[in-house]
Image (cartoon, rainbow over all chains, first blue to last red; front, side, top):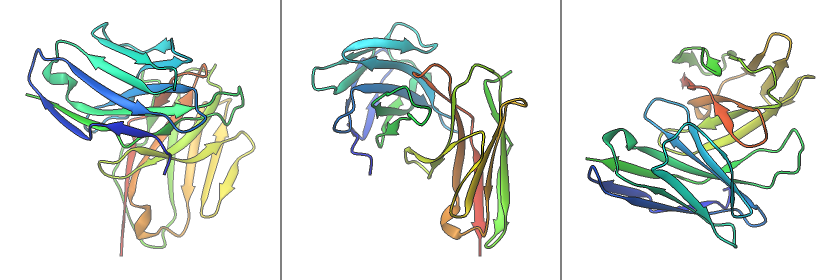
Length: 115
Length: 109
């Protein structure tokens, strides 16, 4: 296993509500990235945090926000939930060195259902 | 045009077959390339990195052609346990991984 953990495993919310998802990165990793995976699609990049600062953002609206803490764990917050936000939310941790082999290691994900 | 495009699936093959997946990417500035494997309702797991010189890991061989912006994965002697979705992944600027939609492989006995 990758050592990346996420909570909760599953979550059911209703439209308009807010949700917070949590991720603990692999020991020694200082970078956390969040992805959204809709059914039948590949994961889509939401944003990345490096040393507590946002370090890149995909094509997601501002109601998707995040935090990274001094221990490199991270939260993803989604406000004003919409039905289309139903997806598997994946957290990935990494330790970028600039090498071509740098990659990211994924946690088990949080499955969010919006009713 | 999507940034990473993969062969449409699913691929249904018998045990022992050789199967090849292809992938193209649109951004010539892409720096690194990977194949990930994803089992049903699980997280993606790194299968292998892909280098211009080609690389092999047991029954798996990956190739990269930068001029054609083309990536391939060959699986020899398919096993039942190879059944999964294979995701072609490109890293452009060291931050975001850009995923293809995935190709589903089903190996049957």
